[in-house]
Image (tube, rainbow, N blue to C red; front, side):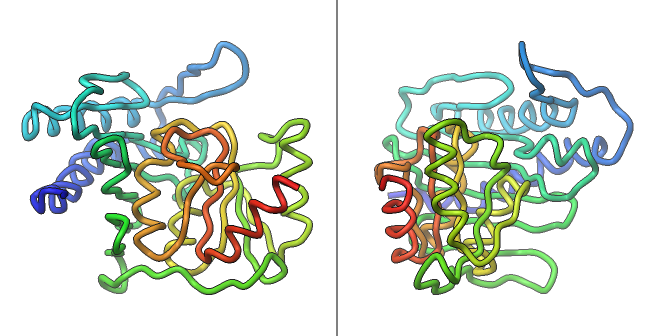
Length: 259
């Protein structure tokens, strides 16, 4: 059972991340590359936001654990572990595009229990507990519900980029993409939230980390959808992920991928 005090705490965390990030968005600043090969950007905004989130968690719930993209892990044996990605979509962030977000997730007993995607520039927040999901932002608060989609032929699909899929993975992904009505690329966490909000139908990804997906699982599943790995098992560890708003569509995607 989740402590009710944790629900408003998500907003406190999002507020602290917003304050740390916004001075760096659409501002000139250094972009560092974390990768030894390729390009994995990190900014002062990433680091400042995660530091602020960790500070607030440690002050408020010192017995809780933390898993974060920028500063590593602490106390992962705790019953409650916060999973943080201060800026999911750093490539969009450094390009001035407002389709990045702060991901704040909570594992309880190893299972995703709470999650929020906060978009500081637009003032939008998508949150859920696996049983229900909520939006706040322009136009006022409302419940989030996925939409019905009875098959791939009617689906709007998203992935970060098809270039992420190699070899057999690419063949599996293309078996899905070639059947859908519309595909959109490059939206990171925002695409998952559009599934929860009923504007898109599915997201397929590979190579995710836990901090890329844990926060989003309670949002989509709270809105009526499903999130698993490509084999149909838990997705909270990351890796290869399928998220869909309609359970029928989710089953059809898994069938196509594993055919």
